[in-house]
Length: 211
Image 1 (cartoon, helix red, strand yellow):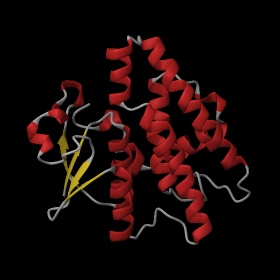
Image 2 (cartoon, helix red, strand yellow; image 1 turned 90 degrees about the horizontal axis):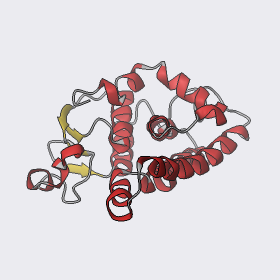
Image 3 (cartoon, one colour; image 1 turned 90 degrees about the vertical axis):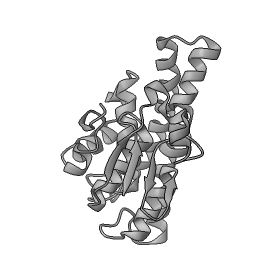
């Protein structure tokens, strides 16, 4: 399989983590967003939406990281990234959605480029914008973790789940936008636990060949 991605893309980062946790190797195909390689015809022929990541399975090209991660969970169910039971799965999916639906989309590159180019936002304004939405999402994430009486080392229990797959790239992004993580000790503890695992270490942005 071929993974079209960019080292600093949060959605690419989360998919790399999921692939590593599943033990699935891919050919790394870098798409350099810094020079807008994703907007050129060569990549448009891979993904008409012109966004990363995209996963070429050899039979089809999958797009949109939530869909790809769910596909991985169905196609390669072991190790599971979702817990057993509908209630637990709903909880983990909700944690992932805080990041995937409410934080990341309004802080991604094309939004920030629009703020810079059309609205004249400088880097201080960009950091403040990102910090606002990261903080709101992390406050909710932290609160949900705090009320979980069976909380383990990770976002849910004692094994990584889809929630962690989404969370850790957002923590990386928070640091890049100068958000003080001390405000969220439970999230910081999860970040530390994940950082001890090779699946997360090898997926980190600065560990990629295009970094």
